[in-house]
Image (cartoon, rainbow, N blue to C red; front, top):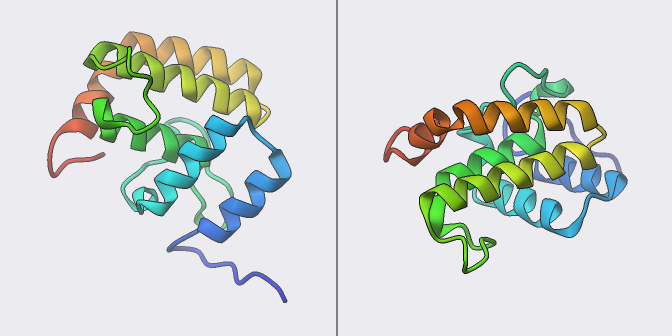
Length: 134
């Protein structure tokens, strides 16, 4: 039994298999799976300035991070002490750094983390705007 690969659409099965092979830390896996279950892949742009995977698959770490920005302080994984907008964004950016490390991008993880801390407020605002998740 093979997997049908499509250029567009729901990539949950493919992402599930990818995560099984990569074996990221549990919180990285949980956030990515929740983002895909919520259908956020369609709204996400993946990772800015980083190529997507083949077959139209956006980078799962980017989809998860975009979903965290969209959820804001309503993120179900957010620790109770992180209930301000600023701390929720910091938590999401730290999660993204860990996700990139788990996906084998240690240098990019640090560079993107610094970039997010400097200019991520704009992406946060865009994802938080109702009707404009990108």
